[in-house]
Structures are given as C-alpha cells and as structure tokens.
Image (cartoon, rainbow over the protein chains, first blue to last red):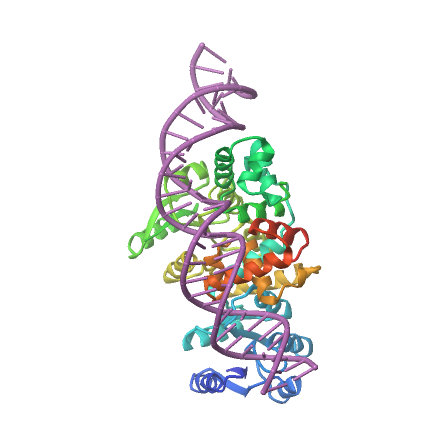
Length: 212
Length: 212
DNA sequence: GACAAGCTCACCCTATTTCGCTATTTTTTT
DNA sequence: AAAAAAATAGCGAAATAGGGTGAGCTTGTC
C-alpha cells in the first residue's frame, strides 16, 4: 500500500487526486493540504511514503517544502507535479531533493504509474523534462575539454571574433578589408562547421568552448 | 516515419529490433550494424533520425560512438540501450550527448515508446536510471553566483537565457508560452538596459559576465 | 485611490541575416 | 603538375531581427 500526501492549492485538483488515490487499489491518501503550514508536524502526525507536491502555492513554495522534507524526514520521497517547464524550477527542484518531476498534463494513470515508480526507487520524469535535465547536467558539470575548434580556418576564426564583438556583417567586412558578400560566405561555412543556424548560437558556443 | 539505425553486437537482439521496427507502423529501420566501423560514413550514407546504441560492442564503444555522432551529425539523437546500471556509464553517456538511456529489460512496446519520446524531443529513461541521474546531478553540482545583471527582471533574464541557447524569437516565445511580440518587447528592453543593439552583443556580454 | 513597475500583445516598417546557388583566384598539399 | 583547400565575390529569396508606438492587465506600494 503506497501512502501519498498531497500538497496542492487548487481545490478541484486536490480533491481529484484524493479521489483517484482512494479509489485505486494499492494506493491510499494520507492527507491533502492546500499549503505548507506546519509542514513537518503534519507529516509526522500522518505518516506517508510519498508526497505529491505542487510548486506554486501561497506561502512556502513546493521547492522550499521539498528542502524541508528532505532535511527533517529524508525517507519520504517527493514527487514534484507542476505546470512549470522552466530550467530554474527543474534545477531547484532536483537540488532540493525531489524524486521525480512530472507535468500536470499527465493522465490519471500517469500519476499512478509515477507514484509506483517512485515507490520502486525510480524517478519518473516527463520525457521533455528529462531532456532538460540531461542538458542541464551536461552544460553544468561537463569539464571543459580542449575543443578542436570545429575545424575553422584562420579567416573563419577572425570573422567569428568580429561577430563576438557584436559587429554587423558590414562592419566586420570593413574591419577585415573584404566585401560583405565574403563575410556572408564565411559565416555560412562557419555555421555549417559548427552545426548552428544563427550568429547567437555560434557566439554562444564559441564563448562556451573558448574558441575565441 | 521515424528512421532508426541499430548498433548492437548481439545478432539475435539486433535482428529482433530490426523486425520490431519494420513491422511497426510509423517506424522504419535505416540500418542494423554489429559494430561501429565506418560509423560516420555509414550514417551519412543511410540518413536516420535516431540511433539505438548498445554500449558494449567490440571495437569502438557505444559511448565513444555517441560522442562521434554528436560531433559530426548532431541532428541525430542517440538512445542508449544497455544492461549497465553503473553511474560511470550513465554519467559518460549523458556527457557524450545521449538523448535517453534505457535498460534492456524494457518490453518491445517500451522500445517503441522510448523512440517516440526521443522523436518528440523528450529523453526517455528507465525510472531507476532517472533516479541515478538526479543524484549524480545533485552531488556533482555547485550553484554558481551571478553578477550585476544590469537590473534585468526575471522574465527578461528568462528571455536572455533562451537567446543564449540559440533560440529564435519564435522558439523562445513557444518555450515561455508568450507571443513573439512579447519576446520582441522584452528583447528591446534588455538591449536598452545592457546598452547593446543585437542579440550577439547581448549574449556575448551575458556569458562574459555570467548573467546566465 | 493613485501610481509605478512589470508583463503582455499588436501593428507597422526597415535593416539584417540566413541560405540557396555559382564562380574565380590564390595557396597549400600531394 | 594536378588536386585539394581556402579565400574571395556575387545574386536573389525568404526569414528573422530590430525599433517605434500604443495599450491593456496585474501586482504591490504610497
């Protein structure tokens, strides 16, 4: 029997979750609350295995609540359930110790599956969220490696430097004493070699990889 | 139609995957190989959307192959499929650029679902793997401090982050669930606050000052 | 209640970028 | 000498970015 406590400020949703849990064999609702007042006391008084946590709530946010739970009752798993797709929330939720992060568009069965996953030691995530997690992972803790500079030629690197300085094609052309069309050609080749489709992307990668 | 190329040294498994793909509507097998010889040439000659990659193979490993693919053909998504549950493999696979990591115990339908998820921009992961990823994330990550920030508001910072990721106005608008015109307005305000006149300049400065 | 700040959206117009193609000249490599 | 790579240049289209103006809505403060 998986005991679930709900924190969700939307009354309709909260009651729907409660009903879903109570009517599903193997699940039970250990409480349903609209905010995180007396969070720890409430959880101590009503033991549960998993907390289904909304992020946006009046008062203490779901993220802060997750931190508090993992600090005082670390054996409880927290499943974040929200509409937010933004990196900042995902990032903070993970760092706070969430055991899963699913979007609110999930189906009823999706919720039950997710809770089951958590109960089995897994961390269910909406695939789109998982993609963001992997990318955050890569960009945040990948040791910077010596980049091969994507095989850019000297002139291409000079052009790229001009772009990094915020120059337009025309200004870059003047600075390097070539025609605007030549700059265009080089830029096209740079994009192809770096597999990007805009100056912003190229500059972003160039700075990250310290090419320039 | 999702075109999938298979790299798997086990003959039986390889042929099973191939059969599964060819008999499932919406999927097609663009090739099935027992090793990564001529990896890039093979992929260039047989275009595909997703590579289903085994880790343990004679010669080049699936991790190295993933790195090579993301370097030369970054548009191709790599779905890792293996028996290894160890952190080291998971970590390296993510850093190599994998778009998903599933264990071999998955059901046939599980493979199709995972491929569909990847095709939709998600990153399917076995829940247990996801748990490991989250924990690796938490233990390996130290939040960094931002600096000045030019008095940008929260929304403006989010927009700027989208630009840094190389998104166009349209894609940034979609990601933040606002209209393109709203993005334009924010971008205009960002430029004014940062005293720049192009996205490249803004991104350049943002990265240099670690605003994002 | 008035006010400011922040977020949202729309319309219009111009400049720039992106990307397709082709092509010549110079330099380097084989 | 032949071949390959690099640099140069041009043309045209379609897409995107940049900038001006105005305006409605919400939230929080005085």
